[in-house]
Image 1 (cartoon, rainbow, N blue to C red):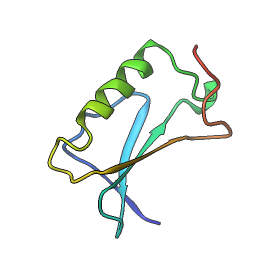
Image 2: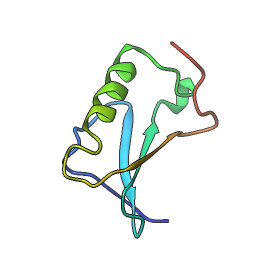
Image 3: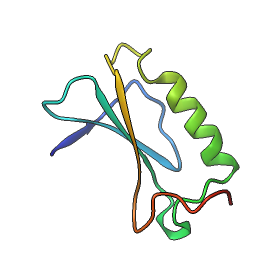
Image 4: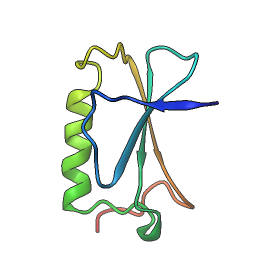
Length: 79
């Protein structure tokens, strides 16, 4: 499925946020530290809190969020 970014959502260092085309109400948040197997450091922890505070309130009609990891692992824990 093709995805497009949500411009109203802040840009992040360790997250990507997109919406699948033809699937209204869904956002995909991807942990993006594949070299560290998406281990959560202080910056990523802050970004997760920020993005989940913004989704659904930015006029984007998001009702469902899929949280995934890029690379070989979803998340290797806290870094």
